[in-house]
Image (tube, rainbow, N blue to C red; front, top):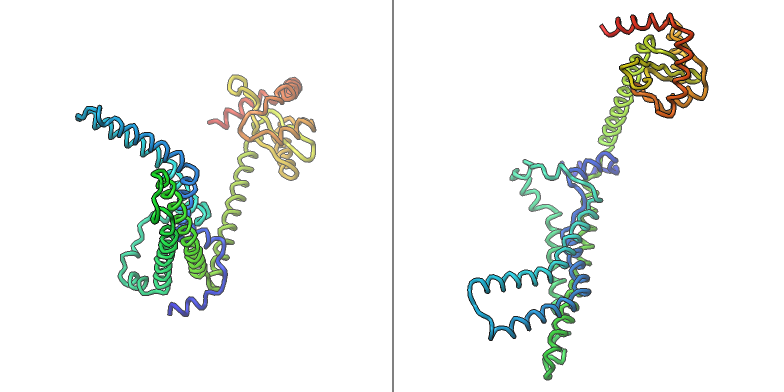
Length: 367
């Protein structure tokens, strides 16, 4: 039955399915790739710092051994010496450890596409299902993983064999050499062995990651019916969001229109923009935008203002800037204070009866 379902999955995964899979942590993950990144970082750091680190460790060793004859051994001196040894070793190992940690982060980020997977940390009861466990043990994926593990053993064995063949041909094993040569030999042998091992594991990691990529792609494939359901669900969500936006816009327009009768003035373009302003001395620090609109909604604001006797002033530049920069429910921008003050001064002189009536209208609205 499962094979039939897999055969029916012929469609590429949708964007939504890929996003959900990334959140669940379902993407190509290769542990060998993490090892290769960490080892490459370690080899790179050692190549640049090994000489300096070796010199500092040698100087420290010389200082310890040369002072054995005169040093006094007690609990305090031993504690101090151990603390110093730990500090010296930490200083020598810190660059390698930091590089490995950074490489691990980069490796995991590369595999996950640098996306967070919050659902991956949630407990999954399916892992306790014994039937699922048996299915995973005897699956094709397990056989491939076993083959990759065998490849890792072969790669490590080949690196060890090639390194041993090269090392035993060194003059160190056939002729007397200086003591300093031993240090150079150990450094060169370590770098050569790690380089061979890194190359071998990189090949294995590439095979492992390619398999994980292929397996994950197959798992995320969808049937035609699943693609249709996903598309309908996505379109439904988009329609819902659009309906909610339209509802919010209508509610906002309704609130703005209900506030127009309490405005001090409506500044118009005259046909494209209309902005209703309110200013209550002692309450507002500056004129407040009650409503604004363009085209048809601007005409509704003007018509409502005419019905309620609200003064309408035509000022094209001020109306245009008020519409562009003003926010409903907030005071006007400071750069418009002077222009709006002049408009209000004219309105207050020419519509005194309206403002006497406006006070009572605002009181009724606040009750």
